[in-house]
Image (cartoon, rainbow, N blue to C red; front, side, top):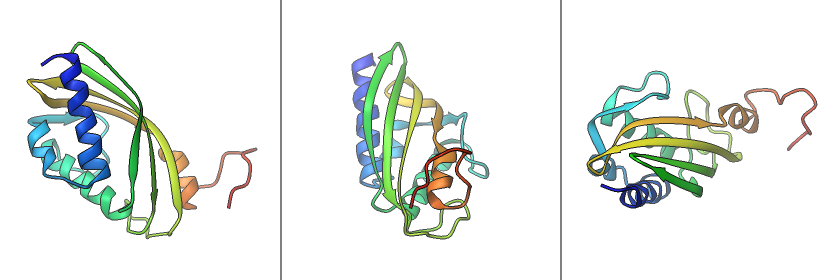
Length: 146
């Protein structure tokens, strides 16, 4: 598969899994031996961990939408810079629902083989998310938000 095909697969993943909650797409586009180098604590490895993460995310933010702001491919890797918005109406990583609307940004790097993701590295603004949920203080000097 080439760079354009890998970008199309990444776009489809964001649209179907993140935005529509179609978890079954993970079976199609994620390799059995998938490795998430930045998986959340407690998530099982491989494809099953991927499914559990996105099921939890969808339950916590059922109206969640992730927009692809930039997508870049080189060789077997696709980089996505995205923005996620949603309302925290379900438990998320032990945090009870707050009803708060959140917006965070992040970057994912995915390596593909034969049209499937085999490795992932992600950096999302988890600290900013925790501040928006009210479970962490804002950094010193940050403007007050409500």
